[in-house]
Image (cartoon, rainbow, N blue to C red; front, side, top):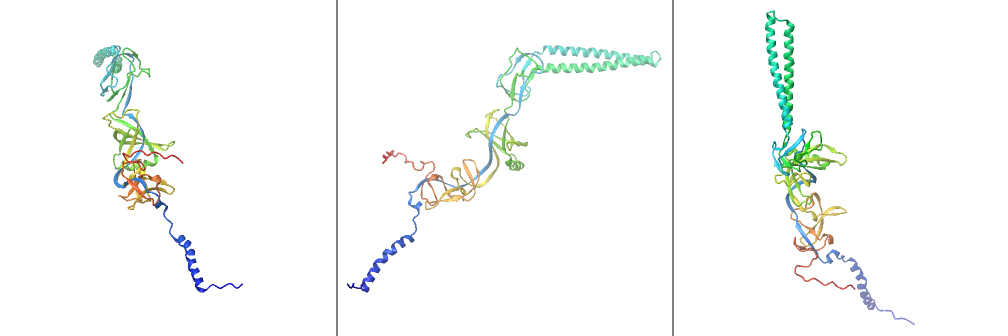
Length: 397
C-alpha cells in the first residue's frame, strides 16, 4: 500500500506548533530566581540611629573599701579601767580623751621619783660647796690634793645620779600620761570590748578596749590586669585619674575619688596589679570591709560613633550590626568595636553617624530581609498592639 507524502504546508504548520513547546523550558531556565528574603513577610524590628558622643574610657573591677587609718586601742600600762568616756559609734577628734586607767599608783611613783631627784639636787649642791672649800684650802697648803680629788669625784657621782633621777621622773610621768587614753586621729569608735572596772594589762595582747577607724576619707583597693598598666601610667602622667565606686549591682554611685598610686609589684600568680584610690566619703556611704564595683577613668574620647551594645552581633567572620536602608531592607555591616561597657559600644570602623541599626528582632533577620520598624520603648517585635483582644489559639490538626 502506497502512503501519501505530506505536503510542505503541512510540515511547516507542524514545525510552527512544535517551537513553543521547545522554547518554554528554556525560557523558564533563563528567568531570574526570585529572592527568598523578598518573598518572606516583613520582620518587625526596633532600630536606633548611631550617634556621636563623648565617651569616657573606663577600666572596671571589684574593689574592697578600707579605712583611711585603723588603730586598736590597747592599754600601755597595767591597772583598773576607771572610765570609758566614749559611746560606741561616736565620732571623735584627734587628742580627745576616750578612756582613763586608775592613775593613783603611777602618780605615787612619780612623786617618789621627784623626791629622789630633789634629794640628789641638795646633795649635789652641798658637794659642790665642799669641793670649792677644799680647792681654796689646797691653794693655801691647808688641804691635800687627795681631798680635792675626792670632793670632785663626789660631785661627778651626784651629777650622774641627778641625771638618773631626772630620767626616772620622765618615765614615771610617761606612765602617768598613759593612764589617760586619747584618740590618735579623727575617726569613728567601734564596739567596746572592755567595760569599766576591769583590770587591763599591757602585756596582754588581747586587751583591746576599742577599735577606732577613720572613714573620712577611706581608701578602695582593687586590681587590674597587668596589660593595662602602661595606659594607666600614661594617664597618670597627664593628671589625676577619677575613680567611681558603685554598688555591686551598678545601680547606685557610692562615691567619687581619685587614684593615689599603683603597687610596686605585679602579682605573678594572677597577672594583676593592685591600685589604691582615696575617697573623701563625706556622705559615709562607703564603709570599711565593703565590696564595690570600681570604675577607673583613663580619658574621655570626643565625638565617637556609638550604638547600644545589644545591636552588636557576633558571627563567623567577626562582629557586625544589621543596618536598615531606605527601602526598609537590612544589610550586614562589619564593624570594629572599641570599648563596650554593656550599655553602649564605641564603633571604631564600619559605621557612620545617623545610620539606623537594629537593636531588637535580629534573630529573624538575614541580608536583604524586609522589616517593619517599631518605635523604641514600644511593644516587642511580634507582640499584639495595646488594647487588642487576645487571640484564641488554633486547635492543632
